[in-house]
Length: 395
Ligand code: PMP
Image (cartoon, rainbow, N blue to C red; front, side):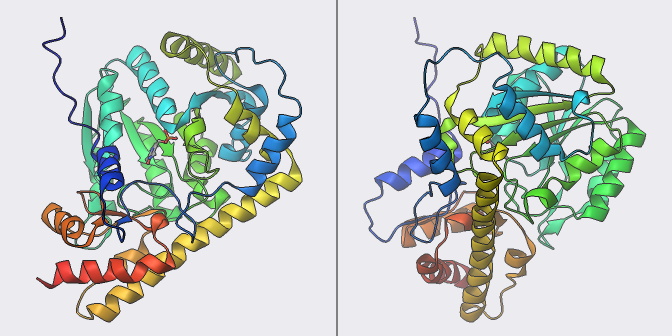
């Protein structure tokens, strides 16, 4: 019956992670998967999250199904965190989703149904799962010019030229902050210029914000979404709390759609609910209760923000540390990209063969594309990582 089912080659990043787990070398260093680790090399449990969870433990009670669109307090708090009042709440249709991935999937299914002729454009390069999710929903996915390997920055004129040529109504996927995999983001002036283009050309932006708080700060990282919304541009925004609440396995995210008015937002929310019903009926309860509790309580919210800020600055310190360590070892090399780029990742420019050598010779794991997760680096692993990279670059 199942003879025709071919073997799954595995997800490139998750498979690497499994291989890392099986690697017996004690000095191995995993800089592949996008998770934040603390100085002890451990995934942190955030203080505000633990406090909210113990408060909730006292009154867990029964566990009914949530509505299709999720927990109401969570949705209101997340709308505020995403938009910060840039657009009236009644114009935003928002649903709780299964992480950022779930938000992209619900959005992709909605687009396939209501914009069936739309092409979807993603940055070159982008997170691999963007292709799988949008193509999986039956939409054609193509790339727009984005990263310039020569400068380690965004080729902004190239990006503008590519988007200028798109047909009205096509969907443009934009990383709101902390671009994955390159760490190269637009600045505020560029976002403003892009918003003007998107508005003039009638494109439909789909923001993906999986790392809010890891770039410049919680509010700064939401600048693009808030600016586009304030400009009256209809848009989608997928958010994730996997990294910034360190709640990966709880699968917490949201999908917002900014609409022209409250009536439209009501209809769109209704169809998001229908999309969710067809996929998994309703989201889980636990993580959303924790997040709503943290965001609705001034003291817990302040604690969470301070802790996240500590994580953000730790990653920035790792960037600076690796940069210095590489410069010491290879004064001729250009490692400026490390300190220019933001967020959890940098694109090292290492070739797949060099990445393989890092893994084989030094047990340092990067993604084949050359993406390095700075958020998984610690003071202890900077030197061996720099040694290994310098060795590979030396030959
Ligand atoms: N978008 C991007 C760009 C990501 O890097 C990730 C997570 N790696 C996601 C979305 C998905 O987030 P989640 O893990 O919450 O599904």
